[in-house]
Image 1 (tube, one colour):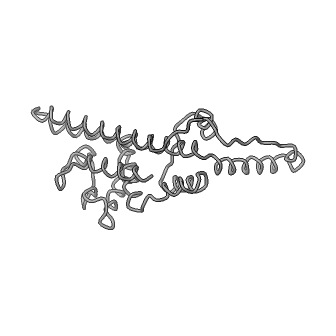
Image 2: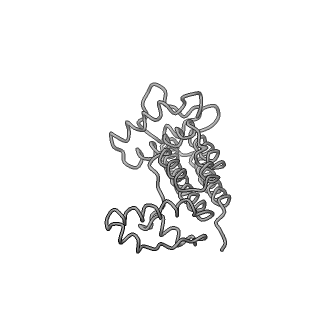
Image 3: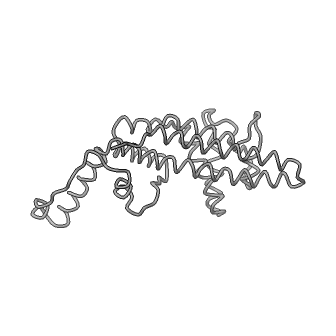
Length: 233
């Protein structure tokens, strides 16, 4: 049975990220002569950032599935234990003694997706802490180590990007506060340079993302940062 290669998943995200950034660069060059270039660039930066973070979330889902496809033993053992415990608690030891669960050394990707997420959605993790916990409890040690290698500053970048995405999507008072809170700490420890907001809150995401610092737009800095993280996951 042919296994999904995690290296291919990383390469797919790298390609998607580059396509998004190159598209942004091409269109920005076109609108540079337009009287509405600032508004257009802000809108384009926002849309490109959304596409970038969605691609990153899809990357995480695909990567976790690829790791499970390579080695399903840890997840399968944990699932077996949960099902056995549930049956024992609900129906007693007598019924449990009649229970027989099949295990498989190799699981096809289509079957794997139905087992891990029977609802048919991509795997999602509300935080890097939750992702690391899942990896530690469900993946083979070598694969889990790649995900748990995400550093504190890298996690801060991802969580900040998630907060920006959420504000763009919801435009709520709460999501705006969470975004600005994240932007106020993203550069802690002199990491993730030029992504912080300073003393003023961010009200317009497009203006924040298109802003140039040390020769790079923030949109490009997010792309570079997420690519660097994905390369060692």
